[in-house]
Amino acid sequence: MAAFEYTAIVNATGKKKKGLIEADSERLVRQKLRDQDLFPIDIKQTKEKKNSNRGFLSSLMDPSLSTDELSMFTRQLSTLISSGLPLEECLSALVEQAENNKERRIFAAVRSKVLEGHTLAQSLQEFPRAFSKLYCSTVSAGEHSGNLALVLNNLADYMENQQGIEKKLKSAAIYPTILVTVAIGITIGLMVLVVPTITGIFDSVDAELPGPTKVVIAISDWIRQYGIYAFFGIILDFILFKIWNAKPNRLEKTHRLYLKLPLIKKMSKGFNASRYVGTLAILTKAGVPLVEAMRIAKDVVENIPIQKTLVKAMTSVSEGGSLHKALRETGYFRPMMLHMIQSGEASGDLSAMLQRTSASEESQLRNLIDSMISLISPLMILLIGAVVLVIVLAIVLPITSMSSVL
Image: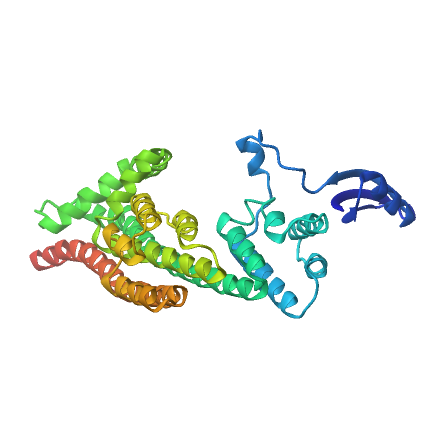
């Protein structure tokens, strides 16, 4: 049974109505609509079968889910399955309570594939932009192990934790950006509006201006004459930076630069290590073999140089090497993490130790971000105060000198 989107006219009122309906064919859809006193105008299947010749642009048209939507779907599906309901009824419930048409289309199409005899993981693979390879592999492992509800619950926890870290990183970047923007705005406002107005009175006075005043006046003149060009120059640099990073080999160079910058290096290593180990934990706990889990987990690492070293680590483990030694050779994992992983391998409970390792790294990363934010705020306030003080002194000093002369 497939899912169809329809547009129809209500015979009683003449108004248009859109919706979603399930049937074995388009002919049966039209019959169902007529039985509901609806006149069908347009009917189309929500998801066509995959075509190996699909282009890049057509793949971009596939619907996707946000992290919040995917996490909510996973949590609700886990709860429904735990209650003992059959999978198709669980999906039907999710279709009915979907908050928007996009979610409703995806859930209905997944349910249709399940009713056709496909597994849940195979049905989810029909929407690669909504359900990642990591997600589908974890679900598949849960289905094979018979612990789908538990695996889905762990997967929802994992996604929420990763989302929390990403929000922390974004806040760490947004907050100083706002402060810097405010500082630049205040400085430009003083230089363009205040300084020229006040220093205009010095033109009629034949006296030597103090050095700070000359510097401030020169900066004010430069900003008024060339500030607009500097603004567009910054925008152009940003665009060129995006163009530079469009190719993988150039992006790799940028990522290598990130790993050399003091603070960014620590945050990048911590974020990617935590994400990788956390992904390994959720996959191995679901029953995915370690080498396959490493192959999937490397895709969640955003830094290209780190990702390449993890490919070598996967090869080492596939040849019989231990996980902690393979990760040590990468040089991107802290000794404490490696010792915990080694302990997990020795005790035979690797997935639980990987989960603890990931939680420990996440905690350290959160503390680092909090410390950075707490330091940036007073530093930026001091910087803004210093800039304003310099401008005020540059204005007050010549006025004081003129008053003493008079």
